[in-house]
Length: 251
Image 1 (spheres, helix red, strand yellow):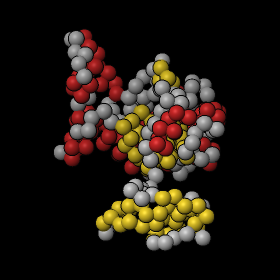
Image 2 (cartoon, helix red, strand yellow):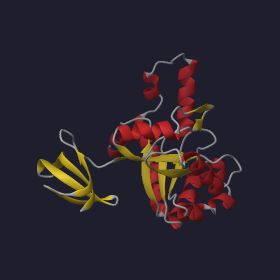
Image 3 (cartoon, rainbow, N blue to C red):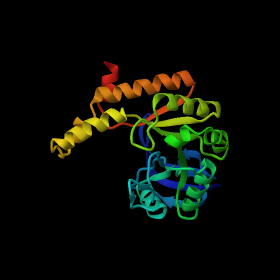
Image 4 (cartoon, rainbow, N blue to C red):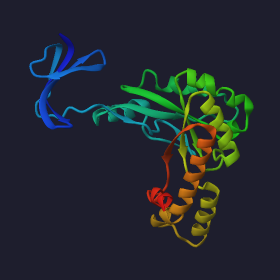
């Protein structure tokens, strides 16, 4: 007798679609078959049964550039659950002078009691923290507190890290057993291109792409990958402005 049985759902397997029951024990799939019994049953006839999705990049009620993202932790996670996403990973954005532990606690206080699905957080390492030994020393405790991923930027004033700062931060994260998620662009050069485009009156949407040349992004990604290799750090290229960057690297 399982905790929960979902009956007659359509499962997509490596051998093709099958109609079957899925039994759940605790929070794990315990069995797939026919005629399974459970303390609770849900008729899934006519529905696909799929694992819950994980959205690893969301912004709930998050201040950014003088604005706050429109979804709260409550409304955003309700929307996620409605679409089949059962875990989100949001961000902690420490303010100047704020410790990582305090920033993490404050962000969790915003989410706890509001979310309707599982959630996690990435810790942002902005410019002032990358340069402050006291803050960098908090990285091991941040990992131990259940926040093992650290967001870093190669773009945007106040958060952009130069290569030396990026290397030092990666070394600290690697030593603590964490991983880096990276917004990878050649930020200062792109700022010049955007300012030149604006000065010439180019405000059409296409100029978002034209001021982010793929080869410049490829250069940023390559530099970051080499630094991560040197630091022995696990690296996920998390966000780039142009999808052509990978092709530029391949060339």
